Amino acid sequence: MKLLLYPTIFTEYNDEDGHYFVVTTPDIPGMVTEGNSLDDAATEAVDAIATMLDGEAVYPTPSDPAKWQLTPQQRIVYITVDMAAWYQEKATYWKAKTVRVNITVPEYLRDAAKVQEINISKVATDALTRILQV
Image 1 (cartoon, rainbow, N blue to C red):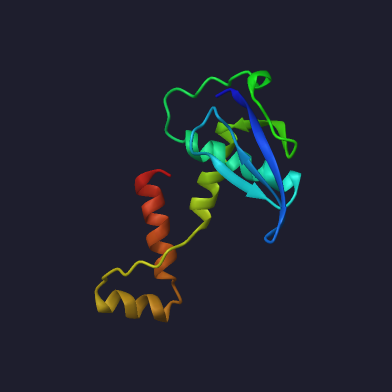
Image 2: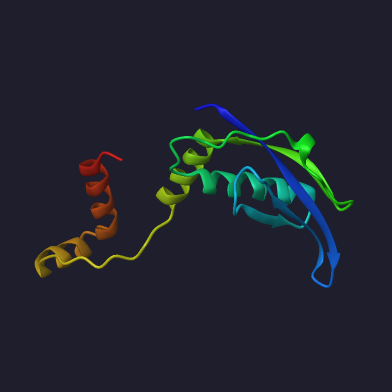
């Protein structure tokens, strides 16, 4: 997968909510995110763009920002998105996140596992990983 490069509009705000930047891009309608600093806003923009493009077969073509009319509080910032890296990060997150699942096993197996200090959740996770090949 190639790298994507989108021009975005960073709008700086200094109001009752504090000092922050809101990020949008006309190339991806509905994409809005924000950050407390330029770096934070750029990081959030990468995730917001990738999230909006997740599952799309064809990505929008970046437009020419020279035609955009900006206010004095706005600036153009190019955001690079590596969808392959984003998908890898997403997969790593989901693999690391655990959820509680109730399973039913015969009582004698539960008791035997307890005596031998076998973690039933780990055994179930290992078995599912092997069976699903993930």
